[in-house]
Length: 387
Ligand code: PLP
Image (cartoon, rainbow, N blue to C red; front, side, top):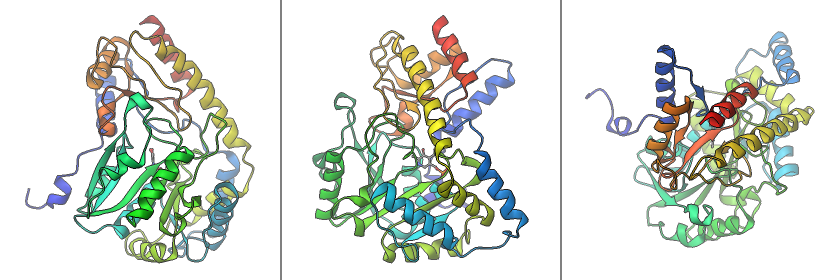
């Protein structure tokens, strides 16, 4: 229709949302399905965070806040970045609180990209990166990684895709969907290419706290040469089970954050006031709740890994972080990701996401989320066992 801009009609719908429609259609037909396609913690938000929001509402935190976010929360984010990530971010000028990590990414791209610019995105990647880049008339250029070498990112692979229009590199660690953590060698490679071509680095670290191996989370902004060119995106959805609250943040050079504030000011204005105070409680309160949730994900991960590895022709790497398995199904009787997902749904009612949804390099895999409840995981294990 001529009422819709080309820029928008060219953007595809989210494959994971489309899958949800299919699940609801099957459910309406009375077919019993278990859905492992989502990416949402099943836990409710820890009580002390909910109490902080209640108290905030009762004490009058019902107004606009500064566009950058409440000073106390920016201060807490700055301390967290310094102590946990080795990242220096000025709470006055280098941090912006946003209604979700997704929105932090949105205003980052809105600020960094001109129409026609290119952003390098190692794939497989989260489903929203490429469409979000497209919303600004820019282009996400896939840097396809290979399952044969564990989806390792190298300087050569990045260099291969750099052109005169390349503006930024978008990194996600821990990674959705592969579950990998960025290694020091990969971080050094990214930093080298970014410095050499004077590119912006955007790093989505939303799964930071959800790790299963004894290796530190690596924040790109802490690497040599990166601080002045890196926008770090993070939020509260995954680690604190706060998806519905919509709260995130971006930290980076004052010159970039200062311009991002304009986008926020003229669109949403600010993140919700009482939500920000809940976020403050999350960052400054006890962290044992996070570790308990991670321990539960780890148990579910083990159980699901064992079951998936027993499927004929299926291999699966140990995810190091986030809450997804990304098995390789090319050796199975249904070697395409659509074929495998369709067969699994038919045979067991288990819903998984076909790997092609995550871009080049994703085909030949499916993604299973183990953020589902214990009951759903137990049900899945029983169905896979029967299979
Ligand atoms: N980044 C990645 C890689 C994700 O997987 C998700 C959620 O699925 C988000 C960002 C969104 O986080 P938020 O809920 O803060 O918008």
